[in-house]
Amino acid sequence: MDYLFSYLILASIFVILGLSTNLLVGVVGIFSVSQAAIFGVGAYTVGYALSNDIMGFVPALALAAVVCLVLNVLITLPSLRVSGDYFVVTSFGIQLLATAAFTNWDAITGGASGMAGIPTADLFGLPIDTSLKTLILTACVACLACFAFRLVMRSPFGRLLMALREDELAVAAAGRQVLRAKVEAAALAGVFAGVAGGLYAVYLSFIDPSTFDLDASVLLLTMVVLGGARTLAGSIVGPFVVVALPQLLSLIDLPTAIAASARQGIYGVLLVAFMLFRPQGLMGRKI
Image 1 (cartoon, one colour):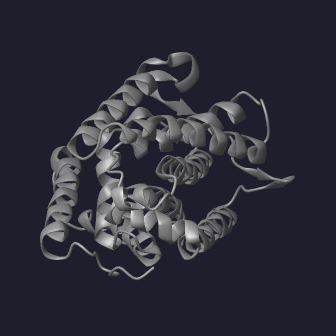
Image 2: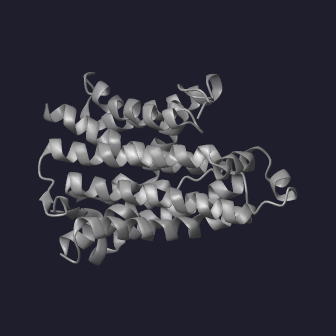
C-alpha cells in the first residue's frame, strides 16, 4: 500500500509540474529546458524555510510560488529577443547555471550532499505525517492546479496564448499585447513549478541537485510530449505514465550500474518516437 501511495503522490506532484511545462512549451510555444531549475528553486525555498524554522508550510509554499513566479518571468524574457533554437540554447545555459548554484551554494542548498531532514508539511496545525494525508494534500493541490489550467485555457486569455503559438506576428498585428501575454503565462507556469517543488521537498524530506538537473528537464518534456502538448488530459496522463516507467524497468534484471542510463535512454526513445509518429501525444489536442 505504501508503494501505491508513493507512486500516486509523486505522479500528482509531477502533474502540477507537467502543467507548468505544458503551459510554456505546449501552449505558448516557448521551448524551455530550464523548468527543472524553477522546480528546484521551489523545493529549496520550502526546504530552507522549514528546516530553519523561518515560517510554516503554507507561508513557505506561498513564498516558493512567488519566488518562482518572478524567476520564471525573468528567465522567459529572453524569448522576446531570441526564438527557436536560440532560446533553447539560452534556457539550456540557465539550467546549467542553476544546477551549478544548487551544487555549490552550500549555505542554502547543502551543496552536492543535498538538504536532508526537511520537516513534513503542517496544514493549519494539522500535521501531514502519513502517506495517506500526503496523498490527499498533493491530489487536492493537483486538482486545483488542473482546474486553474482549464479555466485559463477556456478564457479569452487562453485563446490568445494558443494564437501566439500559431502566429505571433498576426497576434501583434491585431493589436494584442504579446509581451504581456507571455509574461503572464510565464508567471502562472512559475507558480505551478514552485508549488510542485515545495510539495516534493516536504514529501521526500531530502533534495539534492541531481533531482533538478538537465535530465529532469528532459523528463518533463517527455511527460508533455507523451501525454499531449496543449492538453489538460495530456498533462495528467503523461506524468502518471512516465513516473511508472522506472518501476516497470525495475522488473527487468539490469545491473545497477546501467539502470539509470537505461532509464534515460528509454525517455529519449519515447521522446523521439512520439515526436515522429504521434506528435499530438496520447491524448490528442483537445483541451
